[in-house]
Image (cartoon, rainbow, N blue to C red; front, side, top):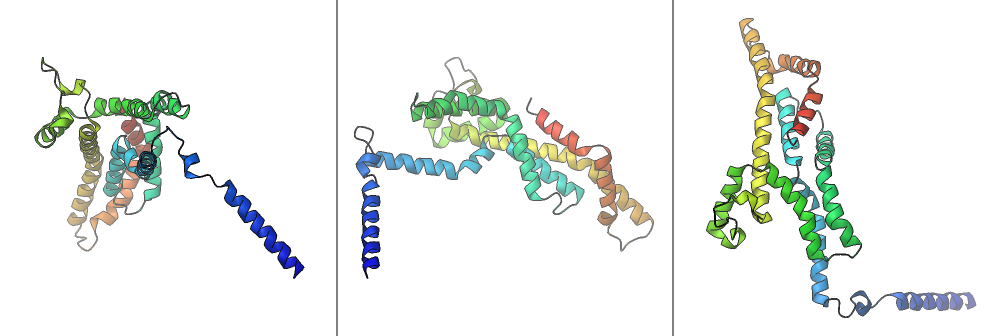
Length: 256
C-alpha cells in the first residue's frame, strides 16, 4: 500500500511539473507580433504550401518535359512496366535538380537564407524566392501560350494583367506578369515541347514496327503479332545507339 501511495504521488508530481512546462498561448504568440488569427492564417498557409510542394515542383520546373519524354520512350519501345515508374520519376527528378540548380541556389541565397536569419519579412522572401523561377519560366515559355493566357485573363480577371504593356506597346514578356498567368502558360509550353520530343522519339521505333510488320505479312505469318517480333529489335537498336545517353543529354541541353 505504501509503495502504491509513493508511486501515485510521484506520478501526480510529474504530471503537474509537465503541465507547468507547457507554454501558454501568450508565449507562443508574443504581444505585438500579430494577432492569434493572423498567426493561425500563417500556419495554415505554410501547411498548404508544404502539402502542395510536389505540385509546385512540377509546375515551375523542367520536370514535366522530362516525364513526358520518358513516357513516350517506354510506349514507343512497347514495354508496359520497364523501366519502372519509380526509376523514370527518380531520373526525371535528378535531371530537374541538375537543370534547376542555378535557380534553386539563387532563390535560397536571395530569399530563403535571409528569411531564416530574420533579415527580411515573409512578403519580401516570397518576392525574392519567386523571382528566379519567374525568370526561368519567362525564358522558356512560348510567347503564343503566354499571350493566350494573358488574353484569357484580360477577359475574365483584368486585374491580373493590368500594366503588362507600356505606353509604347512593349511586349508583355518584358513586364512583371502575375504567376497565376505565367505558370499555366509555362506548363502548356512544357507539355507541347514534351510531345514534340516524344514524336521524335517514337518515329524511328515506328519505322521498325512498319518494317517488321511488312516482313511478317510477306512471309504469311498472319498469327504472329508484329509487335512481339519487333520488340527485341527496338531494344537492340536503342542500346546500340546509346539511347539513354543521347536522350538524357538532349533533354538537358534543351534548356541551355
